[in-house]
Image 1: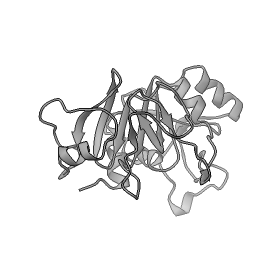
Image 2: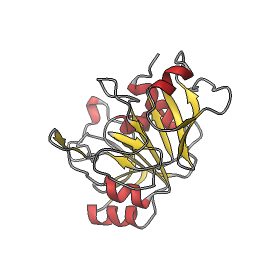
Image 3: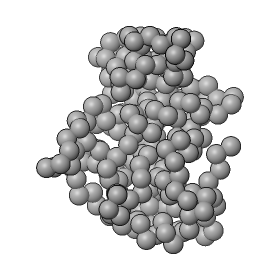
Length: 219
């Protein structure tokens, strides 16, 4: 069975290591802030100028002036710092963000990502994505494995305008966790109840299946 948005976020959070500085993109990536593993301390960075985001606020402590890049109200963790967006992007461009998690329309087997426009249909703007995929070493993409009409989003070569080139290392979809290595997708885990055959059928790019593929764990 395909993963829910919450389950994708839970699996993403398992990739975080103690001491990481992490930028979470809008949508599913942002949800990962709620599932940081016990014993792991990270600093969440928002490109609009907040380092040290805490969990989403309860109704009685919402501060309309404390928002993330997606204009959602957030809280500040102990030790947080607030600064200008210029300083925030200097941090990103300077390579001081360890992990970036963002969504995408397409990813291909060379590690290219297309995430900001569909010509003639949708131009949502790139935001800080181009800077983030150029500045972080560990870049994780979250998305559905295929579009609503069944077309694969894991391509041999992206068909949409690129956000970044040769930069993606990991992809977590509603069906699988994959790594990108040597110009190929490598299947590492599958969603509970999802067969390897379904993942193969819905992956347009070259997919390596190295033996028995375990089901994902969220603990």
